[in-house]
Image (cartoon, one colour):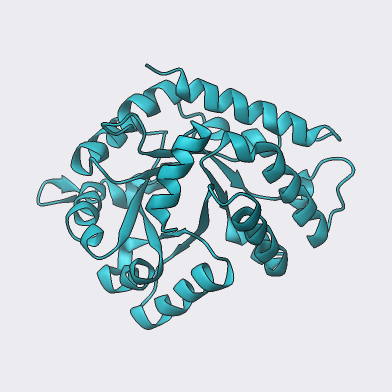
Length: 268
């Protein structure tokens, strides 16, 4: 199934807009998990199996694997998500952005090697750097990111309009005509999130920044949901996967995921 079809099914079957980020850190792996590449895989597998029914998406962050040379482990983790949880959306968080010919290889990596439904991409180099992802799968474009430094460029004005609004409008009016596209908008800026939703009323939004980054769930849901009361993948990584550093880490991660999902669903 396509990204949008899978995501729509995931929203329905899980009754959840939670996205669980997979950001394994050797220094934070819990008791009983080996501190090596196979331990990373064991840890992620346990997190996936304990939280899959609570989340509409999983988002492995590629740098956490590639820095360790754990790409093979990432391949197996992605295969587990696709085969054991086919109604869950798989987003490869890679933030790719390069000239078209190179972007084609990055798209091949994301969709052929890892089997992602969508990949995060950086729009700085323009349409030809995004098009290969739109042709092969789906692109979730960085728009108004959750980090403080994002304001340095994303809030710059062009013809009186912030850059992030130009990106949102281009995605809604142009890139969405070329393929399946979403936007990354941080929960740490609910005002800007509401502005992006107004510009792109039907695009899915990947929303990092709740949990460890402190984004407010109620403000996020109110600002970012679409006319169907959905439209978001609200990501939480560290607050869920590191809910415990003991042997109960998987059950504690499940508890944290359930609590986050229920808090999202409680917003009226």
